[in-house]
Amino acid sequence: MQVSPVITVAPDNLSARGRWYGYGTFCARPVNDNIDPVYMSVIYEMKYVKEDGVWKIFKLA
Image 1: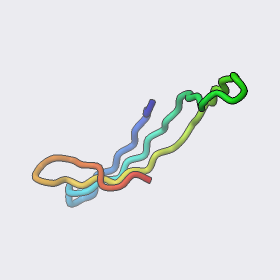
Image 2: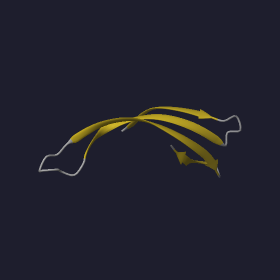
Image 3: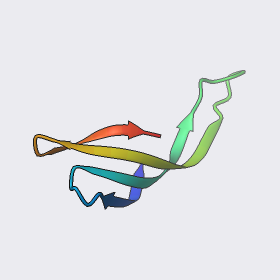
């Protein structure tokens, strides 16, 4: 789940940067018939560009 975005639009209104917090759970394949759930928390840094009036993701880091 991605939440709490902070998006900053450049003065030219053609590019932007975003920072999102992500968290959630996932499970890897079972090992010895045991499922090991993992909780994760990450920060996404993104760059956006505006092309023909539409915002698009340029880079996800």
